[in-house]
Image (cartoon, rainbow, N blue to C red; front, side):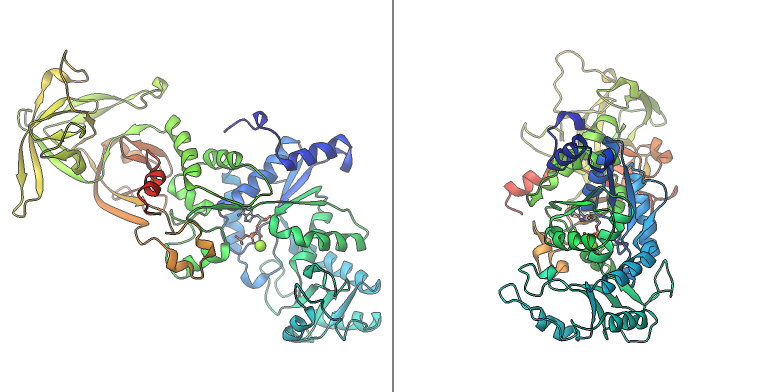
Length: 559
Ligand code: ATP
Ligand code: MG
């Protein structure tokens, strides 16, 4: 992780430091992360998590995890479970128990009665269509609802009957009485409560009126003693309402501060759209390794350290921008580069028979686990007469720029010998199916004086290698800003997953545990798939390639 101390304070931390200096909130810093449990968390949420929990950690305050569960029709327990797992996996712990907005339903209701009694809220019986017409537009003021001047008694009676289930959905709503001519549409008598006859995952059938987000959110913050309520910029226009509601009630008044959302190029950061990909089976699930969900990134092999580092690097500001994918990929590359053990895996095998190597001989060659970090030790690899190399690492003819094997040329096998290609065996259609080579027994782990070989390539022993499936991933979408397109499915990259079924990996990987990261030398970073891999049939996910392939793509004009 980059050291948070070295960077200038972001604008939110400057506000907090000023508050602390003025002893506002008696020096407490309490934040919250308030997801709606209507989907899995994505990389954008990671930014909010790192910000909220990070600030609490830094100022020895606390951060609540609160499920903003006021819209039961779209919410599910599986999302509640997944969200907790993701927050913990990122390395954060919330203050004591999990919070739910639904735990405060009684209080919300009591406060609503108070608003009605104070003449600050009323029951409106306009239809949805009429409500829209009365609301006006950005250029036209709205008009008062004909129900705006209902008496307190009538409002209390109707509200109680709404709660008792006497009315159908849509028959009435509770609205704040603010200002139908306000230039801020959110202040034109916003709805506070609506009738929804659905079972709630936490409260069952106890309620059939549910509070709106804007009403529930500020009161939840106040009840929990939140000091700084950090949210994304789209809530800036809601802040006057946040403040208005709290000003009507005799209750604490947290400060809402907005920051810009994280948007990543070529991906989607909207639960609704990600849900569509899951429902339409465009991906294998919320944790498909191509998904920008935290669960997907985890399955792909991303680490908490890399995601936290990423969130630190992108910073927190009020300006909207779209972060390049390479920024995220560089974070994981740096993390894994330092600590992933090196191994050898051949993705598209080409068989080699080393003709002058004794038929039954097997040697153990010593291989370092990390070229720069000796503390990671060594392992032994079996070397034998038949090996596999990468198809790409051989050409019958090539100029000197090709640092691999050519017919009659020499190349070093990583950690082993120098070999020379003597002949090529083709099938009936001219495809190369096997190479015949010789080896120089005096070259194990060293180059004799003056010996020039083209390069070093990776290999595995044919008889010892493990079979594996390898999944290579590419960007999920073909356009930099898929969120702006009408149909997300239209933007999907048809080549986002390439499955290679006949890969060969070194035998030591038989014990590889799910999620453990490895660098397949010269190929990229991989981890064992946590869902589909078995001891009999291993499956590896490529987390990221060794080099930034995005820059290349742009220069080729492919993006
Ligand atoms: P989505 O559109 O994906 O459903 P949301 O904002 O509706 O996003 P919530 O579950 O309400 O999702 O979000 C929980 C918290 O995460 C909120 O405080 C929200 O502001 C923050 N958040 C959501 N998306 C992003 C993002 N892309 N960047 C930063 N913070 C985000
Ligand atoms: Mg939301």
